Image (cartoon, rainbow, N blue to C red; front, side):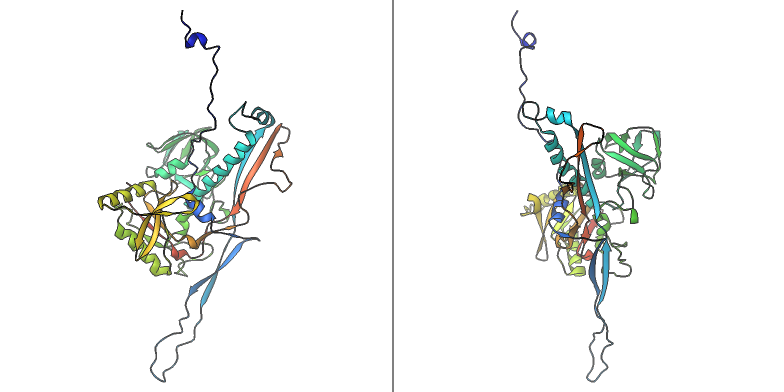
Length: 404
């Protein structure tokens, strides 16, 4: 009988290739543009002064006529707190020893967990940057006593991608985010059917319920997540204590088609860029949109036999060049951007007030803390920050665009 693989199985070694091969998308394109425009803050809250109206005491007069009634410039203070984003890991003493060298593992336990957390927490923060500020990731449909949670039929694929298997979520209303379920783990995600499967007991949901990352839900004084673009780039709604109904300059440019999707076109993009320029005197420098809109724009350029230049963005990313009125902006895609929406941003007027950069808790001189009554250690990564426009009308949004 010949010596074959079956016969020699007990004598052969396994050959392990070097290095751990990453399978997870860790890109945070929007966050990287904003974090490089940060300002350090301290105290109870940050306060910023806005110039909101001109002196009306001007006018043309005939010789000897009565001078215009004296007026003045008007100002308004905008203010807000910084938000807190945390990540926590825990390792046992035994696994630290087991993963101590290349002979026993591909990774070192503590080093791998620390590096991984530095990617995982910013990934969730990038999602927040596009959000509605109340923590809502998806709207529920009607679920009748089941662990397969039905989501609204209109749930965009961008939201389905954010509901990753293994994620811990709450389900409820914005006012009571855990009223239906608390700290459940997603065990399956069906993007086609718009459903997720969760751990634990069966739940019943209505169209008034939402899905949140566990602990993140809440609005107003209970808001925990960063203030996202869905809130910032709007033509209505109080933002950081300033109401655009009272101060009309404190609103962004918004173009929509009442929910009816239409194809992307250069005239539409130019119109938004022009209207932002008219409203603010500033020019947008970044179009941020979904992968589907990016494909649609690429298809448009193909039909026009156009090959645009690329522009370098912060963080090593690149964008396509779009020009209007001699002004140039980069256009790029982000997996967290809502479907059918394109944000026209002026990154000079979007910044992050920060009390800290990404740091591990080490005020006592140690990154690792002992876990009580266990042979284990844990560490916590944190950042105190917010996403703020210092000129809201320097931004715009184009909605109801058909995906490609």
